[in-house]
Image (cartoon, rainbow, N blue to C red):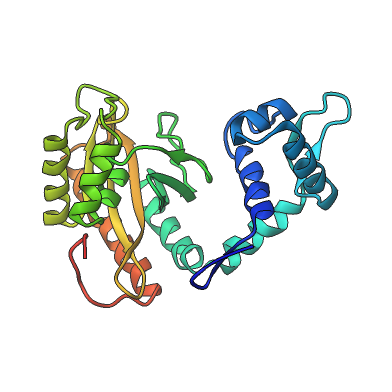
Length: 266
C-alpha cells in the first residue's frame, strides 16, 4: 500500500477493478486469454482475480465453455446506485419529464477522463431512433453535443492538452470538427450559448443537443442530452428540444444544490 499525501492505493483492488471493467465492453463475455489481453495483466494474475470474483458472485463462469461474464452480485449494487447516487436520484424524474415532453431519446452522461459514460437513459418509442444504453461509452470529446459540452467545461489549457494528445482528431463524417481551429470554434460557441449542438458530426442523419448539469459548487458534473434523426428535427422541434433540455439541466442542477448562473467553463 502506497501513500501519496492522504491517498492510498491497493494494487490488487485496482487490478480486480480493471478486470471487472473489461466486461463493460461488447460482447460482455470473455475467456481467460481475452481478459488478460484487455487488461495487460498476466494470465496467472487474471486467473486468480477471476476466480476470486467468481467466488464472491461478482463474476460467473460457464462450466462448459469456461467463458466469464458479470455475476448476479452486481445487481444489488446497480439497484443501490440508482437509489443512492445523488446525481441519478436528482435526474430520474426529470429525465422522464424531458422524454415525455419531446418523445425523443434523452440521456444523462458523465465525464470519465477523455471518455463519456451514459448513466441513465429514456429511449424514444419511434422505430427510427438514436439508441443509447446505460454503461455505453464514447471515447471522443471533439465531436457530438455531449463531447463538445464537456470539453468546453474544461479550462483552455486542458483543451489544448486534449487536442495535442488526440491528434490527429478522428473524423466520423464530413461535418466532424476535426481540426483544432474547428474545435475551438465549437468550444467558443458552446460557451457563448450555454449549450451544445451537433448536426451529423458523429452519425449521418442524426442531430443532438446537450446542456450542463452542475453540482452545488457549480462544476459541470454531467450533461443531459437529446438525440434524434434530422427527419424529426425541424425548426419547431429544435426550439422545443432546446427549451426542454436546458430546463431539465437547470432542474437537475437545482436538485443538486446549484443556484447561481455561471458560464460553462467556470
